[in-house]
Image 1 (spheres, one colour):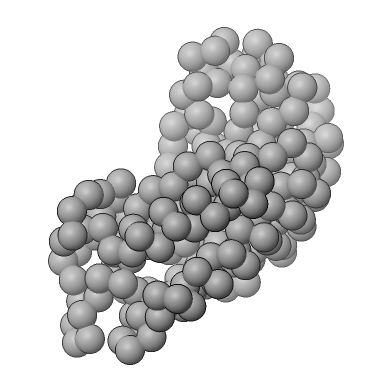
Image 2 (cartoon, rainbow, N blue to C red):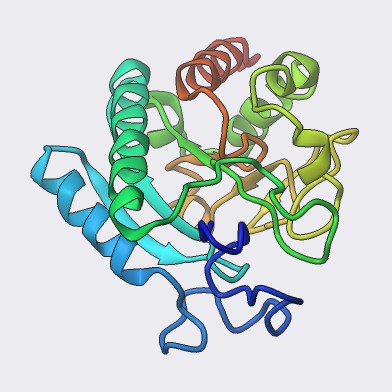
Length: 224
C-alpha cells in the first residue's frame, strides 16, 4: 500500500485504476506495479536460504504472490514467517506498507488475497487412484468449521463464492476448479491420479502453522 495514498500500488489518489484483468502475471508499467519490490524480496529470500519457488503479479492491481515450498509443516511455517518479515523490511525502503488482509478493498469488485495451501504426502503422491483422491477431499467436508477457524480472520469477506472463491458456507472440490474449496490439479489427473491437492480457502493473513496442522490432521482422518 502506498504510504501517501493508503491504496494498493497502481491506484490513483482519487478513484480507481482500470478494472482487474490485465494485471495477472502482467508486464509493462501500466499493469505491473511494485515489481522491483517483489524481485528484491525474491533475491533476499533466496540469499537467506528460503525455498521460494516463484513470484507473480496477481489479479488485482498492486497485488503480488510468492510461493514457498518446504517439506514438513514446521519448516513451511518458519519460512513463510521469515519471508513475511523480509517483505515488510524491504517495503520500508520503498515507502510502502504490506497489507496482509484478505480483502483490503472491502466488497469492491477486486479479488481478495489468499494463501493457497498445496499439500501432499506419500498417499497422494503414490495414489494412482481417483477414489483415494476423492476420499481425502471428502475428509475435509466434516472438518469445514475446524478448518475455517484457523484459515485467517475476516475470511467471510473473501470466501463469497465470487472472485475465484467458494462460499464460506459451502464445501466443494473439482479438477482444475479455481472456484472450489479444494482444487484437484490437472497434474494429478494427468499422472494417473497421483500428486497433490490445493486448499484454496486459507487467506493471506493466516498462521501457516495452524493451517498446516489442520490439513495434516484432516488428511490422516481420510477413510481409505
